[in-house]
Image (spheres, rainbow, N blue to C red):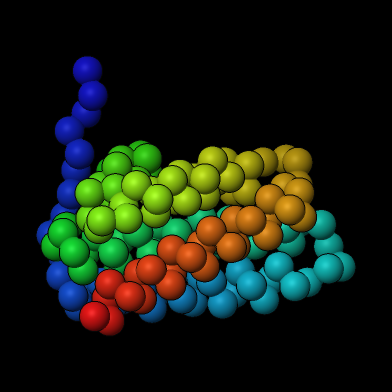
Length: 137
């Protein structure tokens, strides 16, 4: 039996806060990704990209749905994002790809590949750009 989606109410102010947070994560992830001297930096960049995607998804959902996912399962947040905007299925797919990197980046003992880290930061950047469109409209 599927658990009910837990949500919390939010609005434009919360959307702006989550967007600012997403932009900060993206800025740091991009800076970290440029660091080439240590392999473990790749996990940090990918991990920040995941947090970035979560914040960007929240910003979109707050701006459009006036609610955001509040459960432990971020895949439920991807389901909510899918309903938030006309291109929600595409955004949700990008967010799901980020979530696929989460465990490896945050808890893994093997360093994520440079390509995977770059992809994660790119997916996060696209979500932040889209969140900006929604929050600033």
